[in-house]
Length: 254
Length: 254
DNA sequence: CGGGGTATTGACTTTGCTCAAGAAGCGTGG
DNA sequence: CCACGCTTCTTGAGCAAAGTCAATACCCCG
Image (cartoon, each protein chain N blue to C red):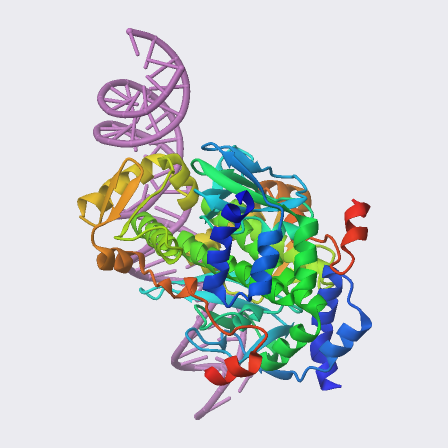
């Protein structure tokens, strides 16, 4: 099934978050996904638009991008396969930022009406969707700390750690190696730096033997040292806790 | 009722987000809130703790604070009366940051079990709670853009605009005036700056006639100019959209 | 082979940080 | 009521991190 291909990464992601009962899985599989492929830098959801559907990344990377008046950009999140990129647009009136492809990116969209129906039918799925939002927010908070209090080299190291950890958790990377289809300009917009400084910072980390970053392939050479530099703790990415629907058991389990 | 006092700000906040049916309001009123008062700088929820309750700000301000290894702090969010500060701890295993009082701060806590029960009973409340998380995340994204791409004066202006707008929406400020019980050190930790630079930046905005900032009282003198400097658009704060439970109507209404 | 975006590097500028010292504000106890 | 001590605020001076500008090299692709 075409549709099945599209849901698979999402199902995997939701399985990580908590139990996914068979009937809920079936409901998700029954959604009418519309898959589209975007080229590098193409806009997936425009700023100011009023989406009538939400989309899941099926393959590749997507970024949320904010534009400043002088044309400067700031990326506020990176999404990998399985991420429900603009689930929140279900609650939003209008997009306050744009979502764009960070490399070639395959995306599956579901109409809001279907999602609304889905969560009306299954509170458990609503719970899991809510949790996805909570997780995004936790990642966002980590970005805030990094932007505010880490030096360029630490921040870049943090980003690399975060992406590897997330890709690894989703089964999309191992061996401390992954490819990131982002230009140094894109990286600058993630880190709140200039592209020139990003270039120098990458060079620095490579020279220190922490990384190997050829083309758009990243190999983490000294994971421990890199995490230490970044003050990275993957904890905030694993916010696995109670299952809804069985509050008693979950409570006691602690 | 003591309990009623504590819920009121939350009810107000939820009313802003969407309709709050009488039975849901009753459910909220029935929660067993435990109110506590914290002094300036006191810890409300400790980093690394595993909360068994979530808390709502009833009066005053609370901040989410992250600590770096060298002792530096970064604030990732400010919460005002009516905000459900650590609603997400319902989903979280362990706090990856601390919540502390930003001035004298009154807080009401509800056991997770009751909240869990509440959302199990009322999917509509779960929807509203989810929405609160979405709103927090939207504010977080704005902080990311500001940290990454605004200069110190713009960023400070942005913070002032955001806080005024939120307080005003909650009926806690008008006349472009509010009090913010934060030291310049606190402000530095919100803005990712040093306190010395914050001091100079405040002076700058006052000298330009945009603000009057005496003690901890802020008066916005030229709102338009301030917003322009900050590139502030309040849109992201008003993510009022569809009501759940009546998806059809909401759809058509657009 | 040429063109456009990307990467790299150098030279110089700017923003914001650090260190340091003094002033002001405030609560507490004598 | 004042003196003390603590924190916060304020200001100056010098420094460091990151930005800007600009030139060159690279690389992919048509």
